[in-house]
Length: 117
Length: 110
Image (cartoon, rainbow over all chains, first blue to last red; front, side):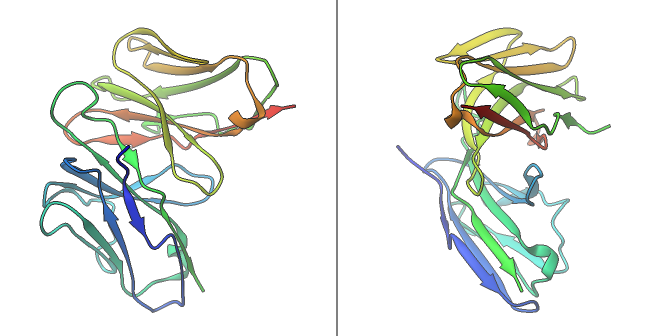
């Protein structure tokens, strides 16, 4: 069964350092989502791509966060510089978006647990 | 008012009982509704999706949707300790808008 891949699974960094997360969606999935989830809360959308285009980045702290999906397949989320408050689980998800029933269903990768010291 | 609301719990039920999880949403144009299960430290896992009013059953799980009342629920029959997790309700309103609730923590007591 196809899965969303993410790396690394865990990342520990010091504040003011740069970190990057990678996501490879399920093959054929046009839409890719990056979420941040703080313990005890639901996932919060950071950025959403349709193919290589950003369709929603309204909650992305653009002074320090950036995201790209250059060829419309895999994606990278970067934080520079990292702050203590960035400690969270970073989740990537993908969906087909078109093509009949279930196209809007999101499937999540295993996530990256970020700890900023 | 939050767009998707869930009681944070914890909801405690004895083993073998029915667990009832509830979710309300504010956007009347919402089209698709999803329940995810999330174990501590893990990513959300899709349990069920529902698109039309009524009930949808899958094994021990039943999703119920009432668009007029803007309400979606998840019933878990014969609850097992392995069902102990946080259950996330997600609502898709079209035009790329996908909103998650904060989740309800379920504890099934052996």
